[in-house]
Image 1 (cartoon, rainbow, N blue to C red):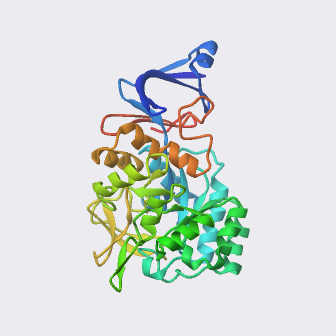
Image 2 (image 1 turned 180 degrees about the horizontal axis):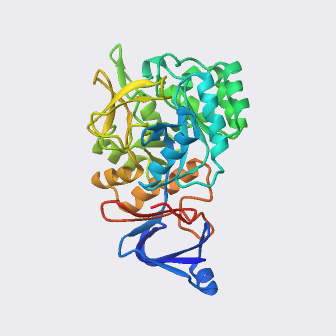
Length: 387
């Protein structure tokens, strides 16, 4: 069945065009292909925007679920919650936790990823930890933060072939042996929760650390040591054009000025918007929950649009959704076409997902219709209506 979405302002190739979008089954069609076969169904976008689906390459959960709960219900629930907000594909993310709990997450990911269900597609897992600098652990569970151990990480790697990216503190990777192991397996290596300075980060980038996880959060910028100014990992990302970044654009983790600076220097081709959302996404202010596996996570409290540590002294994670990310970038003065690119095309490339991220013919029919305030009117995942 050929479907045409008409009367929409289509965001495509960096422009907003008054044209139709066509799809058949799970794939987008060109106008020529669609008209040759004949249109069966017409959807009136009513002047709203039409774009490729948003892709979240760093998300722990939402709607009361965490992927580390390790149940099919958690995977289904979180994916369905985020789909309603425009996420059509995501990378379930494991935080630093118990080995057996993490492996249980691997097994349930494999069991559910091919199931017929409603919600965002799964495009590979992201390991965030546990190999971090303790001084930059943030909300990661301190019981599990440690240096890389080859025997252990090989057990992780032998337990699954679904990991597509792994975030590590590069200065803890002695001789960059871990990065080499990951690169040989086609797993993208990222720097995170790191005490590396600029020179250390630049050296790490030569060994595969060419992406920075939740840029600015839990990493060093310029500091003064014995009166001397020492550049940090943040400055390394600005200096090296080969380093890509991701930002939590929830309006809380980074102020507008920093979002503007990241956009100006790194640009939309090297910047992905991520939620880094935990299970509290969708829960009301005042709610208590845990970051990580249910029954074994870090207690947090939801307030002011973000998760807080119980002492109220630091953030414990994001409760953002991808529509909120795009909305925040618009509020920061970023053009809609670039904000959408950072939420769709760029993360698709970073995740190594060539069949998603744009409205080009042949891509998956992951399509959004949303209004001026980025409120979702319709969401399609591989041609299936989710909203």
